[in-house]
Length: 139
Image 1: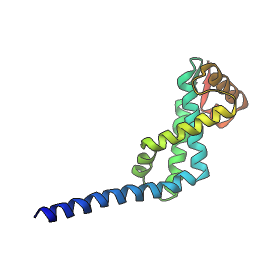
Image 2 (image 1 turned 90 degrees about the vertical axis):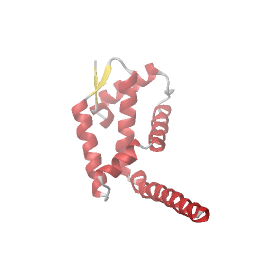
Image 3 (image 1 turned 120 degrees about the horizontal axis):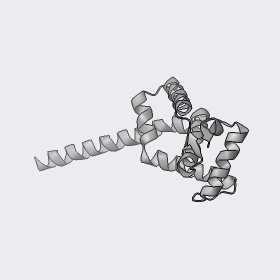
Image 4 (image 1 turned 180 degrees about the vertical axis):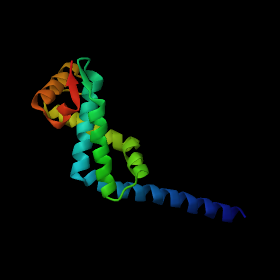
């Protein structure tokens, strides 16, 4: 009986591990898609600016519409809303986009904790009318 329980436990553990790896492998399609990668980068950078700058705020209706467009795109790739939600809420994926946002600011000579620099980038994005800028408004 103990041997059967141990075998059953090993099978279940292996199944969950396989499902987890299969899910992560399937997410590679989302990671590699240029529309999603670009869109989630825009959102991550905009969110950082919104959180760090008192004189800049998000445009919630535009942000919602923008994100809905990304969801629709991901659904077109064959993913369900639940799968998309699992992807964007996954801690590893969030960490990945944080690093992408860090690199975005670094390319502009701004340190991650430099609020003045982050706000300067935000004002530049708003002034240029970039996708990031369209999701934000200056005060």
